[in-house]
Structure formats: structure tokens, C-alpha cells
Picture: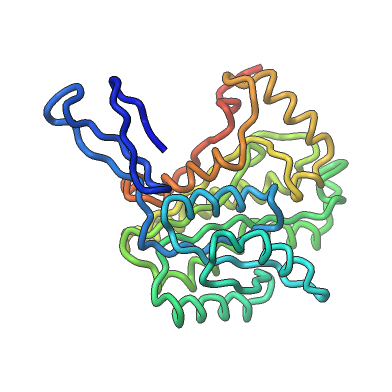
Length: 290
């Protein structure tokens, strides 16, 4: 990959982005490098090749990170086989089952991280769930069970993952999670998931305050609507995407790779001063009034 800069093309190792300022602009121009080589990144939430987590995993790998991948176990092993086949080209050195509603599985994953890696540099949380009945109709009709389940998987789960990762984090580590505009605006057919995302964004701030002492950063990416397995449960998802394409400043929606690129940045030393933030990757849609 190369960057044209004043007629010069700068190339580097695969997956490494270089912005070279020598002989351009002024003598104080600095060399900047997005380089995740040597970093170990655990990615949760990959379901298929449409998953945002898949876009993130690809970009982390391209930047040189060593990957660990979790999958949601099921009785017939269908998810395991699909995720294993999909992620094989990325050569993950950890491949573990993880249902965040099972504390024993969370503990087992990080025991494996400690045994095989010794430390962790990047934790990617791409986990959310709500039943279809909790996404349609009047929000006031939500059942206590549906509310508790959505909040447990989509928001609370970040806390125990960080708890177990905390003693294993290297200095300068990074936690990245996924949010959506429904955390702060009432989005049709989003209902309890919006409440869960709001709780998730609040959790990001509290975890950033807690982990900052170890120089570990915690941030959320608020992505625009993308067609994924999870978003297919949202009624009118195509209308949401078309609305963004019409009204966003860039007049399009975003891709998994664009969200992944932001995650790679947040995982890198280039983002060393950013924590507790929600970064919008939505083609600018969040700034519009109408």
C-alpha cells in the first residue's frame, strides 16, 4: 500500500500505514506509524463475514496484531465451524467458546489468554442481543426478562470481560466496544437496544476511569447502520440505511472495514491520549438535524 504525498510514494510492510513527513512542509514534521505488530488482540462477536467484528479483526490483522477469536457455542457446533473457517486466513492463535451469560466461560477464556499469551493488549467487545419482541411495539410493554437479558448481554458483559482482562493488560492497552446512535436518540424499532447501548456508553466512561491507572484506554465506536446478522432483527433496517444514504453528509452509509480502521487506530499508540469516548463512524449522520 502506498501514499502519494507531494509526488512521492511511501510504501511499507503489508498492513503498516506510514505517513512520512521528511522533506515536506517543515523540518519538524514527524514520522507516524500505525503498527500493531507484537500486540495481542482478543476479538469477540464474529458470527459471519457480515459482522462488524469481522471487519475489525481483518484490520487488526492487517496492522500486524496477533489475534484471538471467540465464538458463541451451540449444541450442534454450527457457529464454531463457521467462525473457524472464516477466520482461518487470519491465523488466530486463540480460538475459544464464549457465552458471556456463563461466568465460567468468561473465566476460562482469560485463563487461556494468561496461559498462552501471558498478557493482552487489545480487547474488542462486539456483543449485543435482544429478542425481536423487545425491539417492536411500545417500549413500555417490555418484559422484565427481556430487559434484563438485553442489558446483560449488550452492556453488562463488558464489565466482567474487563475485570478478567485487567490483571493481564499491558500498559497502553485498549478496550473497544460497539455502540449506535440509538443510545442517545429514539430510533424506531430499536427500543431496549437503545437503552442497552446507552448503558454501554456509560460503562465505557466508568471503565475508562477505572483502567486509566494502568494506562489502559476504553472507547466505543458508534457505527452507522450496516446490514449484519444482528441488524436483521431490527424492523426497517433497510429504511434506516437508505435514510442515512440520503441525509448523511457523505451521502452513504459506512462499511465494516471503515469501522475496523477506526478500531485499529484506537488500538494503536496513535490514540494513546483518547479514552472514555464514543467515536462516531457513520458518514456524519449524527451531526444532521433533519
